[in-house]
Length: 305
Image 1 (tube, rainbow, N blue to C red):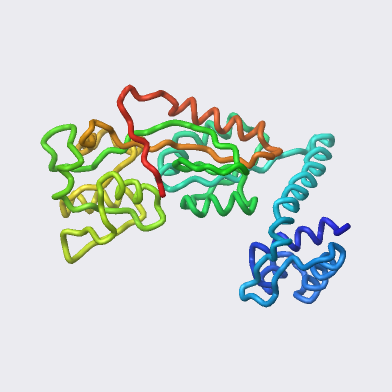
Image 2: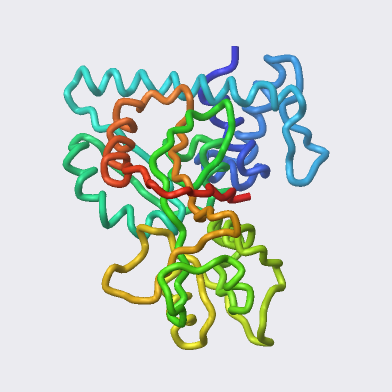
């Protein structure tokens, strides 16, 4: 059968879709990479890659093999962990990705707690947008993704973490609660494309992509900056409950015409066969303990798509 090294080469090439970049990441020459993949294909009796395409694409046979190869590598890595545990030098590495509108409060709240709860873990955290997290999970580049649901995929274990109300930052409001219809005459300040809160805001407030009351407009990647734009130029933006600053005025609850309050459900996605579950479970539990209280209000969970 083909070797572990050849499987790793195949997985890298399937992600990079070009031999030059894949060979650099595998620390081999391009001819060596090409030769090893060709040998693997000869052993298996069929092509894994369609070389007539630019960029490279997996053949139907290759697509069937890819999840099997990923499982093989995951199982193979267990050997190293088992040996390290035996030698008393084991230190697990956890790679986490969080969408920006959650990481902005979750990391300051929980980073030190995670360190205490997982003293023998090296935790790497990065901010990614929702689609980037899903791709990173698919390619086994992260062990856990924290994002707004819903997401349904049989490859991943979906764990509900908490729900949070989405409020409007509307300093001109004369009351603590507004109907969504009252926002129609206000300028919406939106996050940039790719942020799920932008899509949720457009759905609930019934906005179109080109909805703007002015010739000038701005879309940003920071809710703090959008709040400043609101303060200086009027209008409103949406803010998740746990990003609301208690000392700051201007946040109001929103209700739909049927009395529903917009909210999002924050979830964790973990590969089904993750060998790191015992550590990931600790991370998940800390999040649920921090934010897990249920709202007594009638929440309407918004879709991020």
